[in-house]
Amino acid sequence: MSGDKNGEGVQGLEQALEDLEKIVIRLEKGDLPLAEAIKQFERGVALTRRCQTVLKEAEQKVQVLSEGMLEDVDPHTLKKKEGGGSLPLC
Image (tube, rainbow, N blue to C red):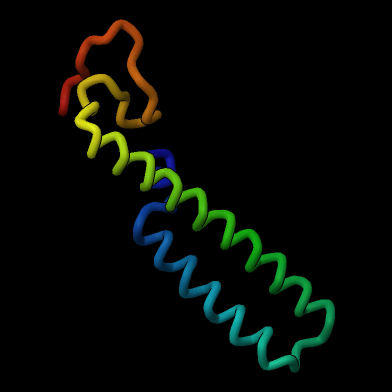
């Protein structure tokens, strides 16, 4: 999964969620200057998008595995392999 290569796998997701929680707490306090609040909000949006991407990739992988189609799917792209042959598991 491409997310794993970019540090966006499970550990990256957990860190992003922690960072997002900290941002929400800071914004809810309401004591940040406007420019800093906007900067934090933008970072929060970026973190949210990253989390959504990682979760979507994980959901797709679970769906592929649960359908028993692993032999016909490239594990890196999660797309069906053309030609119908199976991929090596190693």
